[in-house]
Image 1 (tube, rainbow, N blue to C red):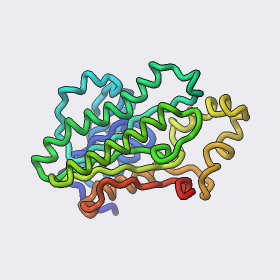
Image 2 (cartoon, helix red, strand yellow):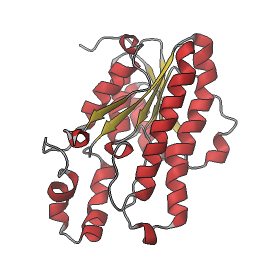
Image 3 (cartoon, rainbow, N blue to C red):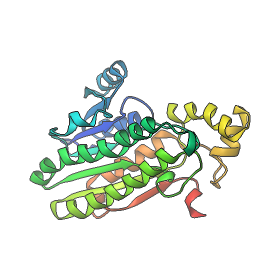
Length: 250
């Protein structure tokens, strides 16, 4: 049985209705936390929150202007919401590029900004940013995603430096390709830009850099998220934890 070590804590997970976010929400609920599922998809958010005995926050996190005066009463913040677009730089739509940065850089900044005062007041908090192997390495045709994840890495480290004296830790998790709807949606675009059949994308593109030749499972990421949120991880901050099958060891 999972230890109820997060009882009494409030955990907010963005993109929490599916994929990695849902797995994180399930992990927190199993460990006794009250979970807030933040997601753009109202039906999925309410369904997930209902199943976990938590609450749904239906929100468009790309609308960053609406988050500037936000206050969050949470002990654990998981910045997970994200999206991918695969295209050469010269063909990349500028508004799409800006949209991805609003969602994956500006919004995490504003959510951290909104959560820190309460965490500081309580003398305890956990900020966990779902980055990517692409926060440490680059791939062609992913200029918006790679640059956003690199920015998230920097934001996480600054949060760690500022939050440490107040009992708040901040870390990144850097998975390789995870078996989620986000990854599945990439296959067509990856096939197009690389000029290969869709059936070859997983083997020839997604798994080529790792030595462990399989996709990461969402609950594997969530297990590390759960540990980073625990009281046993109080000395872990400003770090980036890879779950990438050896990709970044190269």
